[in-house]
Length: 163
Image 1 (cartoon, helix red, strand yellow):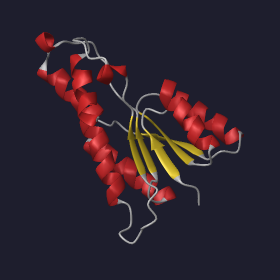
Image 2: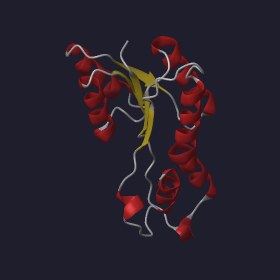
Image 3: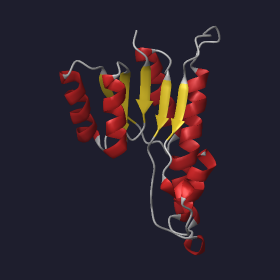
Image 4: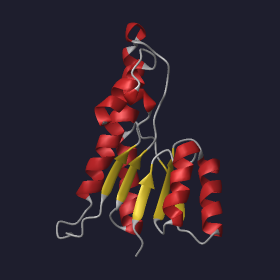
């Protein structure tokens, strides 16, 4: 059985390229999307037309129940994940002086809490007698972590916490 990977935010940009790369390397790809169903479906159709294993999965990562249901479906259909790529994120301009608590909470939920919760769910699904190793959790970071400046303050904080 092929190794399975979940790529959050897999329908667009870097996420789509990650889906293609994993599929071309023989992985079963789960392409997560929130509101980009047609784009995710087109990507998975493209991959399947090339004989790669890929399917879409929808979830609002800000919702704990939807995260749990998504991971349960993946586990039921392909077994425990071998890799989780936390790529989905929210990137909104703000500054330390303009923070709104509601916006901050929503951004932190998607950029920090969801990757941590998905990581825990992934590990919980690995059988206790599975000593094969070879499992990975990747958090996609960007230049905001390495080139600190005051714009996109909340986004930068959430990504720094994943570093």
